[in-house]
Length: 208
Image 1: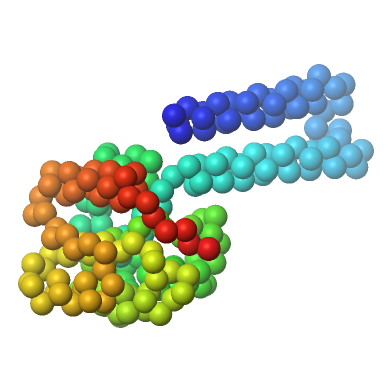
Image 2: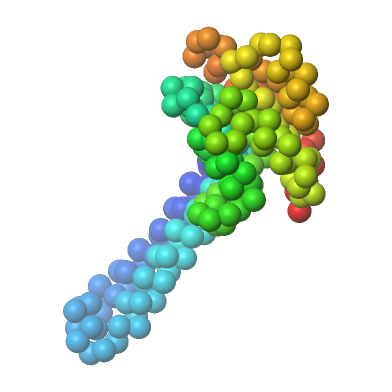
């Protein structure tokens, strides 16, 4: 349904844009003549409409997708999760942070992450525990101190099945603790279940 709506919106806007360009082409003056006659505002108007078109399309796409923030320093695990999301959770958009400090910057909207159109707040966070710079526990502790973000669902996705890590993660505010499967098939099945529960069945808090 979402993909059909986006396709229709894209088609309609491209048809309108093509009609504008055709109208200019039917004019006895070429685009070069427009420039030479200092009528550049007509061409600038087309450029503005093209820019508006892509801005609207990007906004439509990003608003129709659920954003998942993956905090994972292992490139192999990150690639497998990206692949699993693309195959099993197609209405989701995965954002990736390599370490705990980058995750905090993303969630707080600092630096390059200030643009919420490009880097929207996630609906859920998939968080590894053993991370460089700041650990997953540091991220959980930081989230608890943020009034706007402390209710953000965080799913710990770790290779550790140590009971002390599980207890500490839940005590720090994790909403769920999952142990990474050793193979892609299990990971893909896990991603599908995460989407089904956390992004479809579960009622998430509104982050204002």
